[in-house]
Amino acid sequence: MRRRTTLAGMVALALPSAARAQDAFPNKPVRLVVPFAPGASSDTLARLITAKAAGPLGGSFVIENRAGAGGLIAAQYVAHAAPDGYTLLWGGGTAITHAVMQANPGYDVLRDFTPVIALSAHPAVLAVRSASPLQDMSGLLAAAKSTPGGLRYGSGGIGTPAHMAAAAMLKLVGAEGIHVPYRGANQATLAVEQGEVDFAFAISNIALPRQQQGVVRILCTAGAVRMTALPAVPTLAESVPGGPVVTSNSSVVGPAGLPEAVTRHLHAAFHEAVAHDAALRAGLVAEGGEITLSASPAAYAAEWPVELQRLRDLVGLSGARVE
Image (cartoon, rainbow, N blue to C red):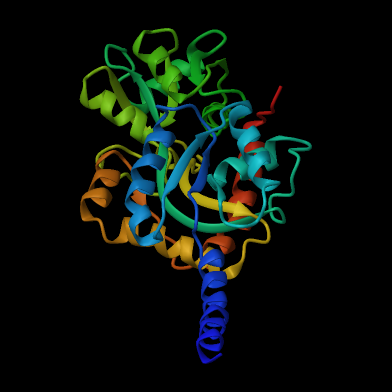
């Protein structure tokens, strides 16, 4: 009897431990949904950072590419996912952009997401072909105003921040332009290289390596301050008074209702991955990025209304609309 009682007690004591193990997060791979195709700059960065964050997370990440509609498909998918921490979205700015550009994006951007962490920001940069006669911003703006119909400019798609940056710039200087949308920023930058368009705004980590290869030349950057990697290149606001700030922000968000403990754990894992890896931070800065690590999920959440208003202002300034 004593033996049976002892075994029963042991089983009873083991049950809470088993339940705790089952409830521990994570107990399966965390799916990070990237809104663009494999090989895109954002996809490459997501894979790099999640590889670093897996250790402090105590689990693994699986990248799931859900390209389409400029990232709207991925944002909708995560907005309606189970709030258990196993489905996350790479790039909260994608969700915010569509909330501004779409009459009905299929979610409420301030209600249907849980901001986890901001990681880095890459400003848009204006690039021309290296052989272009447009040597600086004054020359480009003069050509834009004097060319009948305006210069041809590319972007990664209608209604993208790159499209709006160019449209706002031309509107501010009283010039016209011919917008040529492509399927992504890489394709738009390639169009610059091949002379299909006169210029394009592209994300710095796409354009800067091409400048280093000697195929494009960056005339200005659209960050709030000059890029650390290009201190001699002026900002758009320096070149065009009232020029907007346009950046691509690397961040992680989940669906609304994410448990606070899970949100904190995810934040800590990504924060450690970037904050404690000097080589990773140096690489981000070298390719034109700036580290924007949020101190807490609440700190990142506080940035969302500000970013939302900034994009609304950009839409109003540019006049761009999704067609």
